[in-house]
Length: 294
Length: 294
Image 1 (cartoon, rainbow over the protein chains, first blue to last red):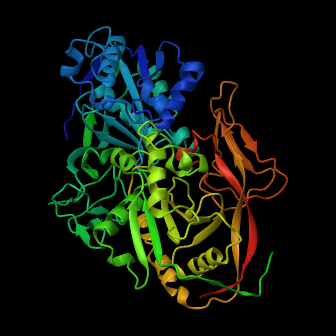
Image 2 (image 1 turned 180 degrees about the horizontal axis):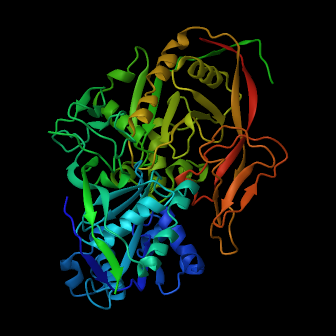
Image 3 (image 1 turned 135 degrees about the vertical axis):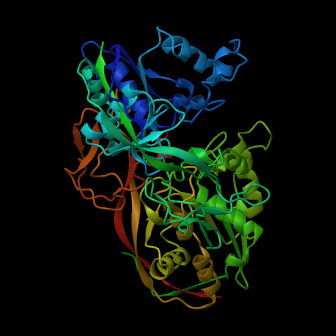
């Protein structure tokens, strides 16, 4: 655990973007953002400009994850600096446009905070995934959300910035329970509250560790499913020797790692093509320093 | 209730086809049929030829419901009699090929029985959907399956012949519990048993009644979700006055039909584009006459 006794000062979060439809078949974010585009009252807070935005409209129209390539993996330095043109994959063009509107990343004219709303077919509940564990502003926001929101939140650290995932929900389906748990007005409320000072705190998080593929034959075909004991058990401990996969003829394959891990994104539909049955995470407690507005 | 005291005679079911991948993202049937193509021992019975068959290989490859049009709606007289050619939609070409291999429908060279394996995102459990309520052979088979299989089966009558649906399972996902409940070897076992005589019996079924769309605005946009009280309650009674939909601002819309119905295919992902939130069914008891092999 790291600690800090200083009070960090930062500029007020004046501009907040809320993205939906980064994956066009994840219906909660698509629906909420479209509603807020029509009527932004629910996410309006005095002194904060909140901009709801559909990031991948062609994928939304087709109700598919993406058209040419996964937009969520398209914000690379290489893509963002490539000469623009119609010959680029649609999502690369779109990443460049989004970077122009809401970025460029790290520049003074960039939006202060971006929330990207996602669904998953995994039984993950509400999950906030942040990129950095060193940013006191983000950690304080995580802490606020976990303590104050009615939904039970899991907090995870990964390479994706400010992604908000809720599941389980099948692709192309809108479920009322998932829809309601994604209303992020309380998050926006926090951003409005940053005029106050927040004291130091600790935050329990899951740090992404290892990507686990399905067992496959020599031709690359999947030969086993997620074991029924593991299915839907996102965030629960998986110990060495615990059942992990079940082959089609009923054989149990067990976890052989060195210590306890906490699997998540278990059996997510979109990750079959990414050779990922689940990811393991490890629990960690982070210390966030005090913050106050300059 | 109709009744029959005669014993119907019929020819032995010698040839049984088992279809998977009619919708390429319904993974239980795709996986089972591919396994049985590699090794058919599980579905082999003496005196019965069982042929596992992937009906829509291009959709399976892309893990999508269909490529050009829904194969499950492509077996129309008009399509089957159209001049064949590469300019036809892929699934229409495929329907013609399948009709040639396993049909033509009603002809002496046609397969005796075809099972079409499907998944649904709805909480329907195991459901067998038959076209005809007048065929004693089919009703006796339904009765056998409901009485003898470990899985709890719902029996439904619709325009789709011998379709076997299991859910809930998201598109593109393979869940072990759903996979195991779809192993149809017990059904094949019954077909092998048709040498015996089956006495008259009654079968409780759900007859499809009405298709219900989501509430929409004047532009055709959906303005409400399936109500949380109805979500996942397939086959349970919906009475006049019961909550049916919930608008995005929280208003409850109630069922205003004349009597009790039993909704199913509630919030199925693939039916958003078909303007269908669920279908209503009504309970009915059918009488099946005795049958024996000629």
